[in-house]
Length: 449
Ligand code: ZN
Image 1 (tube, protein in one colour):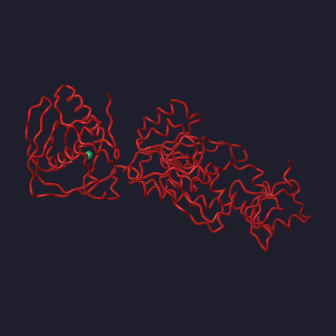
Image 2 (image 1 turned 180 degrees about the horizontal axis):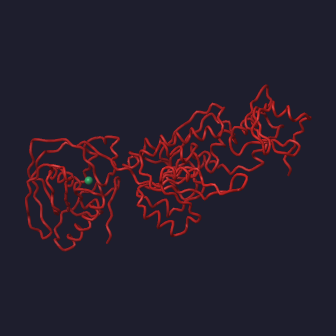
Image 3 (image 1 turned 120 degrees about the vertical axis):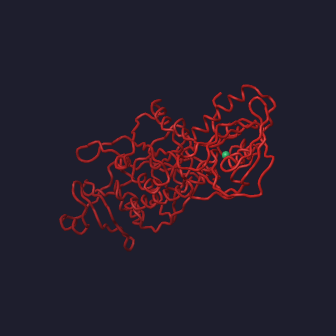
């Protein structure tokens, strides 16, 4: 049987362990498994409850750093351990726990304890412990009664001495803006991005902004075509990620992949879910003339944008934002929010809420007819369209059958006034300059059916 470390808030960590009466070879196997896990996570002690075994068994082993004055503690198994005496004198130290990663708590304990226990054959022995051994023994014996460091004091943040090994999924500037803020809080081991798409005049394959960003950081990037290819699964598994973060990755990630990290996968979505699920939430908020939008951090779920919500952040809209500007602001907000909640999230201390399906709405990909400005429509609507599609892919009108991109416009006495336009194959220019070159009546066309 392969044992695994159990993490807070699993119920078993709060259980009272049971007295061992059966001293057989199975105890040796249990202790060996525990030792392996303790070494993997570089701990100094472990209780059987932490590997899902309800027996009163703890192990300790400590090899100090070369420069430390601490004494080494050889590997020892304590069965049915009991504290039989403790000193009046106490000391206070920051303690961590393998089952509560990235958290340290200040804990006051007696400086010396005497522990009575049995070995694997059932013989009793006594240990008078001081220093590090006294502390480890008290911590592990606490575990056997379901007591954790969190019961002593509030965790002190920031304490992350080890950052979570993180894989980031994303493709756009939204990804890199958020990641820039998060970088100092994570150990970024891999970026997964969408495949290069043809762009520019020569239809050259251009890697995504996220891939270019990975190169400048010297972080490996991957562009898997088929997310169901077992090689993708095996590769991601081999990275032993603690966490995955998804920010503007346009494809559905299979459950087999997003459940790989022990802390799961979080998605930064630029809307207040369940409003505006799907691929164009930022544009949708501008188009609707909303007074407020925001960012949701949620756990990934089998369907797009339906996961349990971990955090919300609201953003007030002035009614002047372009898509590009708002994308940047929401990416910043998302990065900051996730950075702030990450320690609590990793400590398992954040409650999540389900989305209200009745209030859900979905956005869709933008098509050419969406971007066309029908000048018979209200000017306010057209002005919002201009902002929702700036800088990319741009709203447009048809002038003698040719598209003219409208990059900036405003409403004046109920009329839409163009500020900056861009004719096909030319640079952007002020509308006045364009008119000077046009010298003909303006004949705007409808979109051909
Ligand atoms: Zn512990």
